[in-house]
Image (cartoon, rainbow, N blue to C red; front, side, top):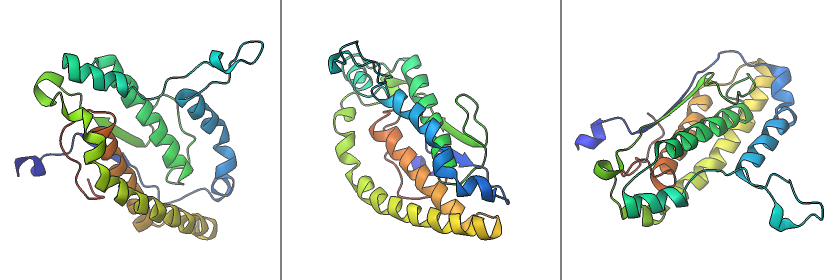
Amino acid sequence: MENETKPFPAALTVEYSPKSDRLTALFRLIAAIPFGILAFLLMGPSGVTSGNGSPSNVAYGGGFVFLPTLLMIVFRQKYPRWWFDWNLNLMRLFTRFSAYLLLLRDEYPSTDEEQAVRLELTYPDAKNDLNRWLPLVKWLLALPHYFCLFFLGLAAFVFTLVAWFAILLTGTYPQSLFQLVVGVMRWNLRVSAYAFLLTTDRYPPFRLKE
């Protein structure tokens, strides 16, 4: 019960703006393409190959540090700080991009500044706060959340579509829909922190609110 009263060690807030820009909302998918390319380069093949185009020479941006972190926790009970910082900042980057793509914010996502999207993860003391064997099964224990998030993701898509029409007609993102979409993103962050970023052993709550 004590854990239930403490804030979850992964938090997300997005500032609500009473006015949204109709023009940028209309062309949001097109405007997001350059940042989407950047995201792809960070997460997967960069497209840099050798002269003969050999796929074995494709360069990678990296993505989240998952398997090395899992192995380090299991065998050494350590979570290197720079790995945590990389995961945290990459998660912040993609969350800013998601907030822009989902029409939650009008400003173009920054590659390094928080802007109005604030995401925090608590750096764990791997030896004292994390069970060394739990990372092996966290992805499985989180299965109920995947099920919920699948349907919540569909709902968030519908909410965003409704909000898009609302912005074009009124210049305002309905606050109730805004809170629901942010809640889905917050839920997803908690599951990611538990199952993939491995920053906490606390099981994520089934809720949208903070």
